[in-house]
Image 1 (tube, rainbow, N blue to C red):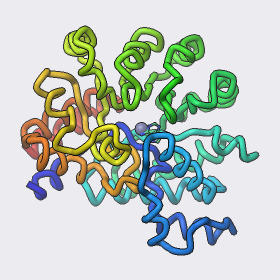
Image 2: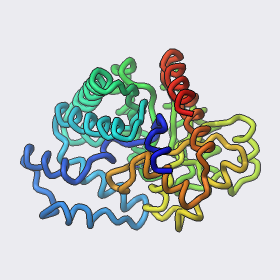
Image 3: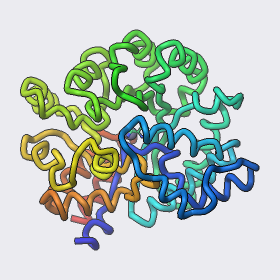
Image 4: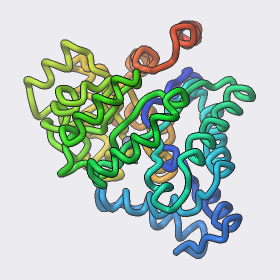
Length: 331
Ligand code: ADE
Ligand code: ZN
């Protein structure tokens, strides 16, 4: 089965670029940029990657971003992730980022956008991998901060795929950002929101009704609301599920209890993703392996979810056809 998952041409739709910052690269960048880390060695960094919950995780994740201080650093980080994609046969990747973390430290947003864009350029030219970036508003910093971010991001609308909503979910429902996301949509950008990770089903409803999202990130609490399940069955809203993230952040107790089995049985439009692979010790392949081994997800379901990920991606039609052809040849 490992070999089946290894060879499957995969698509990743939910991955935060700083969540792919491996401890080794964190140490290298800290040294390069003269940043003092609160860890003496790699083992101490790895030992710190134990999280109580989402808030605890977000704090440590944001601390790790201190070592990223130039567009070149973002380029290095993006290429490192895309090389990992190549090793795992991930053909297309859409990655989340944010600018706020860096603008708050006095950096220009260009550092983030240009660094990641140049990483994707290298990834396409040297590895044949396509994709793009989706900056997120940091929801727990509130609406005014998000408005400032949007004012800066508008200038980059041709460099990004859309805008997402991430970080600490409760008590910051998508509805707080309704008017702002309408402006995002009016600029022709896609809209995404983390919803139903730690939040209940009302957060998913709000992402659908108030933001009119193109995809829901996580969405696993939908099972608590039969009306929502019926809506998701009917509309086939894509849900980017991240199994190893959910167990690492104790949103789900054990992998064998992960709702993905039930979500698939209900005919929901589910894809598998890694979220923050360096922090949770699992890239896309390991996430697929985990749900295969522990939730009874079959080879044909992995293929179906990959086809659904291609359809739910923001790749253009020509690239979607190419990805579907690769998938068909594999099958
Ligand atoms: N940012 C990085 N990982 C995240 C997650 N799992 N939920 C919300 N925001 C995040
Ligand atoms: Zn996420």
